[in-house]
Length: 325
Image 1 (cartoon, rainbow, N blue to C red):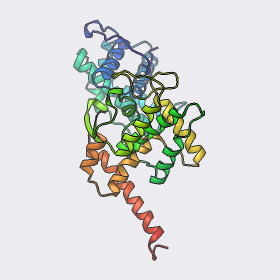
Image 2: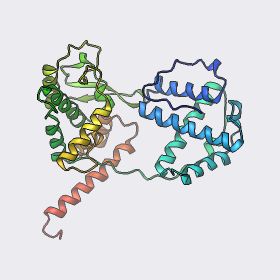
Image 3: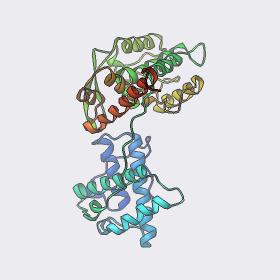
Image 4: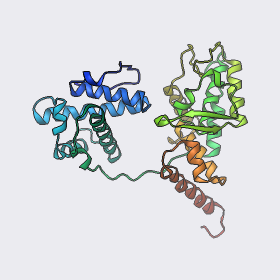
């Protein structure tokens, strides 16, 4: 059975002329996503798993593994049957997950058409479930500040630098609106941080992000205490044993801190990025500027923050207006 490409997998770039099977086509597509589309490890894993499940379903449905040429003959009815199977199987997918699986399959077929000459118009005719975009779930300003302050308390007295490191990372997420992967991709040569950072985001899109004084000071404090002599091209944030800091550490850190502080489950690293946007919006920043700072490809994605801001205004009204009760 096909194997999902994990974040640690680093396959050789396959030549299109050597692709002979559906599995090889899947591998070539994942390499293209990684190297040319700069997809995140999480996207590679979920997209790879979606196509793996689709190929497994086709093999059971047709009684044999589907070859490269056979992919062009997959019907719209078969794809709908696959989606119905995932919707009502032993581990049913939510509408959002089902839509993501269909998006992965469409992306794969687009690659098959452009790069390998295997076309299938039926795939484009299949519509996925309607998914209403959920509003972002930011943390409040006091909760964000509490998370960052608590991160400065190291697990061991002889590792003060790790607390300063964790504070610096969370401050970057909140103060610059970075994704975890963007913060952890910074190199030593980029510190001391300049007035603005050039960030390479999703889809290889570059944006400029202003750096607040508090962010710069947090990174400087970490570097002054860090026990490692880092080369300019090495990752800025390091783990205890000297390797690059991982997203898993940052996620586990915020999970531990929110439990200690009694914060809700929505207090995640990505919620700090959401907080960056909603705080700017509440202070009067326009949507186009916030879109550029966050690196959103579409303004409609940024517009979701207006719903969050409106909720905050209504809550403030209910708390403060004499006729709200």
